[in-house]
Structure formats: structure tokens, C-alpha cells
Amino acid sequence: MPHAEPIAHTEPVVHPEPDHHPEPDRLPETNRYPETDRHPEPGSPPEPGSPPEPEPGNPPEAGRRPDPHLPPEPIVPSPSGASYGEARGGVAALSPRYQIGAALALAVVAVAVCVHLGMVFLHVAPSNTLTKAHGKAIDEWVYPEFEQNWKLFAPNPLQQNIAVQVRAEVQAKDGSVRTTGWYDLSAEDGRAIDGNLLPSHTQQNELRRAWDFFVATHDSDNRPSGLRGALSENYLRRIVALRLERDDAAGKGGVVERVQVRSRTTNVTPPRWSAEKVSDKPLYRVLPWWPVTAADTDGGAE
Image 1 (spheres, rainbow, N blue to C red):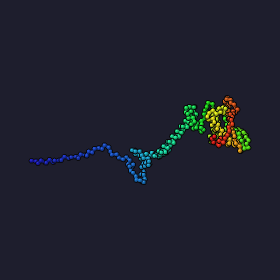
Image 2 (image 1 turned 60 degrees about the vertical axis):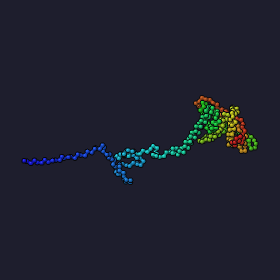
Image 3 (image 1 turned 90 degrees about the vertical axis):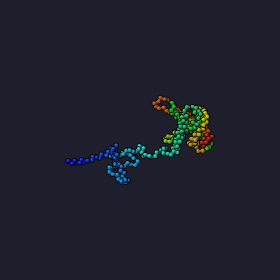
Image 4 (image 1 turned 180 degrees about the vertical axis):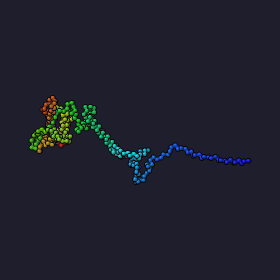
């Protein structure tokens, strides 16, 4: 009987399964600018090809990396020429205490300007309730420095030349009395102003305004027409007395006893193209003789 061969038992071959690792969602971010992460040691020279370091005070914008292949952006100065953080000038640079002082000073100046403009407006305005109630205060504010003469803008502007003249009755040292000739005080002021770049207010307006003041407070017969008539006479008399003393009208040892004032009015010649006809003869307004006292020449009050 034949012998049966034993059947060899072979173990199944087990193939190791490959490890299944989940694929990551995204690759880890790699540094695209490895050269920018390296911080060179202080004092070491920059590597060739490396971008220039940003200047102090001009850091790159946040979240933005400089491109090493582009040139650095130029620094544009501010229009005012002042660097960032520079202290402000003017009033803003003052401390709060000085700012308050400057504001108060400006407020005082603004109030003074408004008051002045209001006074001048009331002075030139027609008569009204305010001018009647506060006329004295307005005149004290305006006269004599800020007086306004609106005749230039009137429908018929002033077309006359008015000269104020004076003569004196002088008692000489020996007791004799003589009368001087007429002194043209307006012509003296004109010569002082002519060629003078900065003429004084006295030379320009004192005599002229004194005469206008007298005419406004007197009638055609030279009689006072108001309470200010006597004041205008005293004012005009003192001016002419001081002018005569300055011109040495009395002479050596002489004394001015009385003065007489007159005005000489002449019409302005019209232009050639005008058909207007005016008289060329002067008109005189002669005032009575006024006695002169020591108060008139000393500047004191009677």
C-alpha cells in the first residue's frame, strides 16, 4: 500500500498594510524671505544683495514686508517743513495762562474798535435820540483827533480858500501904541506843511478848526448863537495870541494889548472846460477887537 505523502500546512502570508496617515489640510507656511529674518549683529556690514535697512523714524507699514527687489520709497518732507511731533508755534504754543491773557487783550481791542466806530458814526449821523442824549460824550471822544469833515462828499463840495489873518495893537516900551499889519496865519501853516512828509496835527488843523468852530457858533453879525460861543472866542483868541508871540509881533519890550481877526475868502478858479463863472474878488469877514490877557499867552484859564 502506497504511503500517502503528508500535506504541508502553509501559513497564510499576511502582507502588512501600509500606514494610512491623514493628508494635512495645508502645508506649513514656509518663510519666503529667509534673508529678511536674519538679524545681523550690530556693527556688521550688510550682506551683498540685502535690502537697505529702514531709517529710524520711518518704519515700514504694519503687515507689509518690503520687497527686496524694489528700491526704497523716497521720503517726502511735509509742506510746512516741520518734522512730525514738532512743537506748535504762535498762540497755541503758549501756556493756558498766557493764552487766556492774549484772548482778553484781543477782546479789549475789539471792544475799543467797536466803541470808536460807534462814536464816529453817531458824530456824522443826523441828529437823533442818542446824539441828543449823549452829544457831549460823543464830542469829547471825537474832537479834535477823530473829527470827520464830510464836505468833500457833499453835493456841492467846498470850493473856496479861506485864510485866517490877524493884526495886533501893540504898546511899545516908551508907552506909544501902534497897530501891526495883517499876519496871514494860514499861509504860515501852508509853508510849514509844504515839503513836510510828516506835518503835525497842529499845523494842519488847529487854526482851521478853530475858525470853523467860531463860524458855527456865531451868526453873521459875529454874535454868539449858543452856549459854546464864548468858548470858541476864547479858543481862537488864544491861538492867534500865541502865534503873534511866536512871530515877535510886539517887538523888544512891547506888549500886545488887543488883537483883531479876519478871514479872507476867495473862490477856487473853475477848470478851463467848465462854463461856470465865479468872482475872483476876495471877501473879508472882520471880527471886533479882543483884549489880550496874560492867560491867553500863558495857556492858563481865566
